Structure formats: C-alpha cells, structure tokens
Image: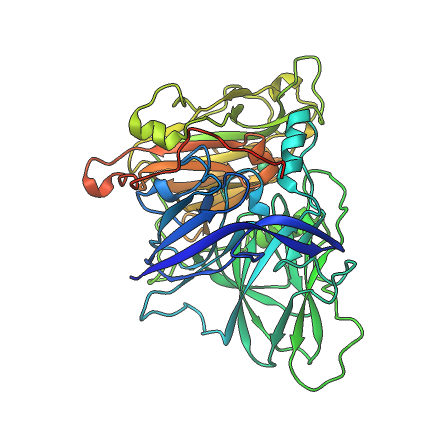
Length: 550
Ligand code: C2O
Ligand code: CU
C-alpha cells in the first residue's frame, strides 16, 4: 500500500452557468473538484487550506477510516470547522473499498460546490472482476444554484421559510443542451466504436435522487459505493444522493451523437419543475453530425416509483471468492427506526407543512452541539450529548397511514446518540412514515461503515413475515440506501470500527432539518480494536466564524 499527498485550496471563484455569473467556494479552482486516485488499502493525506470566508469541513464519503473518526469530517460530530485562514490535514485511511467514492464538504450546504471523485483501483497485481475497459470517465451529477446557496440557507432558516431548491442539475458541472447559454458547454464523452468505457457515476446533488440513461445504449452495472455487484444490464438506473454507481458502456451503436441524460426522481408529491439535463456521447469518425442528438426515451418519468424499485431489487453483491460477503446472521442488536419529516413549531392543534420544519429519527431531531461529539466522548466532557437514542419507536401507530394525528409530528430536539459495543451485530429496519403526509424516500447514509441491504418492502415492517423475504446470501453492500416512501428497508452490519460515526439522510434538506444521529462504537479492549489517538491538533471549537456578508 502507498501513501499519497494532496493539497486542497478552498477559495471563491466566479463561475457562469445558465447565463448568470456568481462567486462560489471550490477546491483548486475547479467544479467539480479534483479527483483523488488511490489503490485499495492506500493512505492519503489531504491538507485543506481554507482561503474562503466561512468555516468548512470535508468528509470522505464511504471511506471507512478504520479506527480513525478524527479525519471523517462531519461538522459537530467529529470535528469543528476549519476556519478561514487556517488549514487542517486529513489522514484518509482506505481499507477494503474498491471502486468509486467521493469527497464533499460537510458543513452547511457548501457540499453543493465543494465535492469531487475518489477513484480506488484494485490493489497492485490484481484486476477488476470484469473485462478490462478501454478507458474510464468520472461523471459527477450535481446541483446548480444561480444564487449564494449558503446565504439563502441561513436566511431561510432564520425566517423559518422552505429551504433553497436548485436552479438546475448538472453533469460534470454543466446543465446541458436543453438550457439557455448551455448547449456549447455541455459535457461530451468521446467514444470509439467497439470500445468499452467504465463510467463512474456519483450523485453529488444536494437533495435529489436522479434517474440516468443513455439513448439507445444499455449499460452494465458492475459496482456501487466502493463494492462490486453481479453485472446487470439495464437501459436506465436510479441513484440516490451520496451513492456512486460504476457502469460499463460499450459503444456499439451506429456512429452518431447520443444524449446521456438525468432527471430528478421525486417521491414526495412535488411537481417536476426541472427539464432533464444532458451530456453528449459522441462517436469519433467521419459522418455528418445530426442536427440534434437522440434523447433517451428509456429515461423514466420523474414519479416512476415502479421503475426505480424494479431496478433496485436487481442489485446483488458479486459474492465471489475474491470478493466475498459476510452478512451477519445472528443479530445481537436489533433496531427499528421510524424516519419522519416533522414540524418543529407544531402543536397539538396546529401543524402544517410550511411551518418551520424538522426531521426526525424515532422522533428525535438532532441538535448540533457546540463541541463535537467525538471530542466530548474522547475527553469525557459531559453535557454535550446524551447516549439515549432509542432503539425502537417511543410510540407505535400506523406509521404509513393517512391522516395521522398531529401529535405524531412533534419531535424532541436534542443531541442524542447511540452507543454500541464492539463487534455487536446490528440490524436496523428503517421505516418511512406518513407524518404530516410527508412520506417520501430517504437515502440513509452511514459513516465509517458499509452495510448489507437484506430486504425492503412496502407498508409497515412486519417482524414475523418480512424477515422470511430477506436475502442473506448476496445482498448489495453500500453506504447509502433509500428507505422507500411509505415502506421499510432492513440493513445489517457488524460494529467492528470503533469511533463516532454519523448516521443521516443524504437529502441535505432533511439533514439540515435534523434527520441525523451518531453512533459511538466502543473500543474492543485491545490496542488493535481501539480508536486511534487524535492528530496533534484538531480545528478549535472555540469561535464559530460565520460571515456571509462579503
Ligand atoms: Cu456524504 Cu454525512 O455524508
Ligand atoms: Cu430524508
């Protein structure tokens, strides 16, 4: 294994999209940001120099960082922000991940402009478990705001308004040919007839699940979230925010231009106000270019839950000799967590969507502490968090029913975390709820771990009949997976990574509203099963620096 060094310069820069120029914070002057390239098991030091106007942290999404939560990144959970004019070096430790992951800011909504790919090649002397592609390309899917999104976010939180919605989505930083001022700059993937390309798709969008398709071409899905899958051929796919999907694309169609397109996938009843975004797959060669590329008719409509679920149920771990699965079978620690979009300012008689919103897990809305949870745990500082996050709902009702009473929508606002003993085998059933008629998909993400998705289904989870449907042989292993609208998903993992790890919905608006907790996995009693010591200096928690007036 090797060690690599990167410097990340965080600085504001002007960008023009959708006929409009604005300044935004980026890394090394680029949007999306720079790629990190490693092999399985390497270690990377990233020195982050903050030359912007406000505090920022960076998270290495999907990198397990064994025993090293100090470099995981989420503000308030494992560190305080890197203040303007200062720097901090993250030590990013790779272990068994192989494929594509990504990094992103983990404070406010800076994630929208501060993100980039992490490419993890097989270890020296080993190869992909599929035919070697002729070339590779990262495809980052993101969001674009024509305004300063953090400024707007803080204003909306202050006045209790709905949180910002994007102006457009982007593919490798570009809105695409359907938008004004954008057709010349849309991303182009040049291909040669007969060759195969590995596309590394990353959903870095702030809050949206996305459908993806390429006109007239099937793709073969071979991996997800830094793990391999049994290859599946498909004409479209769905990708939740936080997830990565590796696909093989073979250029086997008549020479021409084909649109690669994304469309928002909406499960909460909002109308679709976004035209699809495009990039062009362009064959090299001598032919007359078409006046307009072919559009993928395979791209599902924005509310097509059936097609989204049909795709997701096909996912299976590769489960080969070189890439085995180890699904925990005997569960020592079962949990059942109801997720809800709640109303912070609700009371028994009055509670409406549009009032100041909150989000909750088992009715707990996470309150950001002023000292991070990791430091408080390590130093035994009391009063920062309480370790009583509930394993089960406090009240049982028909979670997915219509017309649920407003009382179900009033959360407790506190910094509650879950303690787990080392090596416990954990099953979590996440249950969506229709509180405030707010049923929708929630892509739940776990830091420090990946987990097996052993089952999913509609309605309220039934702990007698539903486990009979579980796949314990080759379930997909991911770090982010959606709780289905008005349904449930069951995941399993072994708590073998000591530390403090955030757990949250990757819909950033829900994260901001508090659909968050953290779990603390205790040390296992030997040096090799204990958390590493902190680096010589972590960013200080003393003086939160927030300045959006610049
Ligand atoms: Cu990709 Cu806690 O996030
Ligand atoms: Cu959510």
